[in-house]
Image (cartoon, rainbow, N blue to C red; front, side):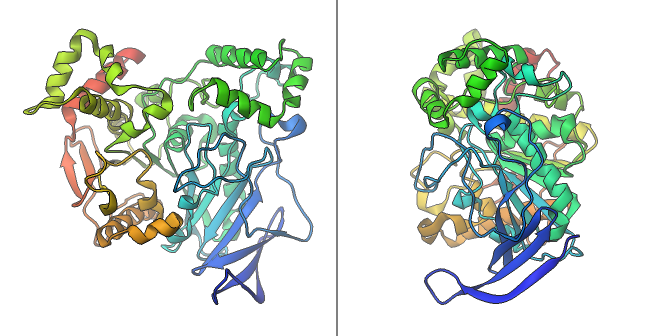
Length: 515
């Protein structure tokens, strides 16, 4: 039985005179005590599966706990173990292996509300990130009439380990290794079972994520295990042409890692030793021996049965409306993933002059600028258009955007919009804290547009609405992209020549004809 219980007391919120209504809500697991903010009811740190500790480390998600009495749901839980890189927008946060919790923002927690649901998947190269990061605050989106859900999923070696020792306790029918993706699927199953208690409609769920979160969106669209758990998908800077490691490669990498950690063999004794490893030792080894990348979902035959881009090309994907897009300076990511865009130009070999000719048009480019543009097109712009074209071919509406709006405070200081910099424009500037004071009227206008597009899409499958620049569907015939800049408009055949080059390279690699 799910019912809303309003608690008739007010508690002091913050250090000022503002008050927040304390609210309680019952789900199958027990009663949650949450808060309200700007008329949005917020419930944090809800365990959606059992804690992945002890014998549950490197196991598929198990049923979540229940509790007696009321569980405090007013503060975020710890993020999953990771080597953090705090910045001016991302603070250092507490972490723990018991981290698989989720958070819900809802403007109306009556079961009859049946509001659209938006489930956020954070990025961070599958080795960092967490739902408690302030810029992911769901309040402003929820105020538009949707339920927002965010959650933590396992990262790094704790989230994506394919060690052969795992087979000692699993049957061949079980999915193992892609634990981070299995966590995402478990969170979506929790949403299906529980979101009505928060006013959400389990039959109208949109998944959206950025970077590794956008990659996760694409993985979930391709995964048979996620079928029926969502009805729409948004992949922000989610790559798309990236090669998914094979099971064999993942197992070898995991075996090598185990050996480096002092664990050899593939029997139950080896697994016991792996589970005895201290989290801090795992993180220290990663910091000392690996770059930010290197751990990611792989083809396990269960969660992912093949290359995700090929699944899109063959139409072996969920039939859902889809949005994909990129930013204008995605090359800001290059150093973090160990890439050198200038050196990478050599990969074109004898074809580099013809590639340069397409990019330069009527003007000359330095190697640095050419490398920057090639990096962004190869990893982000071309995949967004190509995957959207496959969705269109599969009979579902698809849309493509390119986010080129540089915030007024940074105009003239950066070559474009950095990887991930569109996120505050989607969620609103609440999570920027002090830095929100530097936003301009035009910044806020663009943020309102982006939030409205995303929410409209979640409500109806069509992002268009009153007062918004028209955003037509992307088709292989019309190829229209929404260019978000100082003036937002639709562009036909956006960067067509560059996209054709990068799509051709991808098609050759996977053995398919260029679309």
